[in-house]
Length: 495
Ligand code: ADP
Image (tube, rainbow, N blue to C red; front, top):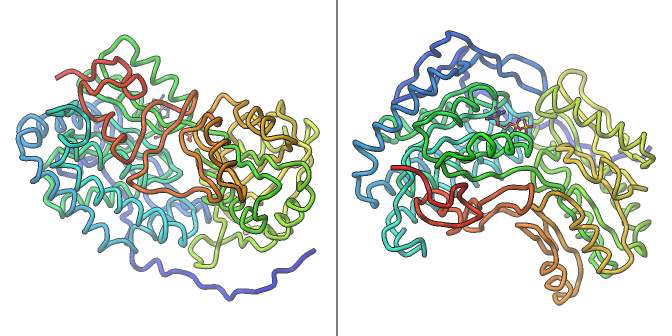
């Protein structure tokens, strides 16, 4: 067993900065309102299985109330407001989030299980950046190349996943508000708490009632939002399976649709790559956020001549990964978000073993309670194995080899997905040659998992339609901004 070179004393973040209420209601029309059904469900800390709070379980009647509030706010207030005034609200929201950044980070870590270092340094700052960035667009939309007088759809229904709860909220709410839409947002069932803190920020920012509505609940609540006739546009981030069911539900309607779905990103390492740098990029690509990342570099494609050396370096690096208490500032890998997700990861890694791939895990110990999975790499993987084809959404890397650049491209593109890819080489010309041939929405060169509000993000094939972030990310929220990629019907939403 290799030991860590450095032993770290515990450095836990204090949770005193957050106060979690025993129960939460929906946020509809500027007020917190109990669910019409009276039902609630528990949200737990996946690192300890402690129940954090019980939140309202939304049904069709709650969705209806939220859509009516959003419609009324759109018609009476938001659509009449000068764009530069709209922008001021976004700036105000961003500044209030900055003031409460530590609170958001701690709450997200408790509810999601991801390390405090990531919520503090990545999720929360990026979420705030999205509001600042889109605040700037609000009064400049006619210069965004979206036509002379870009118009919003009206009411946007937005459904988000649990892997980056606050950040996905920001990716959805900021562009929708900047372009003049009002929203009904449905957070994921395992991570509703930061969205409810965001509701408080909306109140404190003086955002007109009904511009942002948040209905908590499960998949059925999401389905009720999708099928509500008063919605003009749906934006969804989540699994490809649910994305397909939403696309089916909306076909034949004139609701606009954007989808950000799964991925099986190829991280390609050529033999001339700076290997130590690549090893850190591989670790960041697959173990960041416990691998709960749709654009994770979950398939490592390594040139055969450096395979053994790279794997040895990677294993040495993986022995240094600290897994455990997400509230500890030294933790690299936190808890798996839910029991169901842990079971899915276990099922797929068992399939990897059964199909003949060779697993390897570092010798770290795991906490007793909660949902945990050791970082894992599989070598001897063939392109036909399930672990090379299906999205695991956990800290599991499938390693494949290639001999020529052409083979690397063929293997990288041999997937139903097309969200992200990475290229590691010292040669700029090889980066460009490779990037041109990869079918992926985002391609990183000599780095991985870098995000910026100004940079559009989205996929090809089964990874989705439309982009989020940057100028391109405004398009899905604009009526008549015809793009085959960004709207379902091609004619935008109804009035
Ligand atoms: P994951 O597999 O990552 O949990 P899902 O696609 O199941 O992703 O969930 C993403 C979001 O979609 C969550 O907010 C979830 O409640 C919601 N959801 C699940 N099923 C449906 C559905 N049939 N219609 C609309 N939303 C759904």
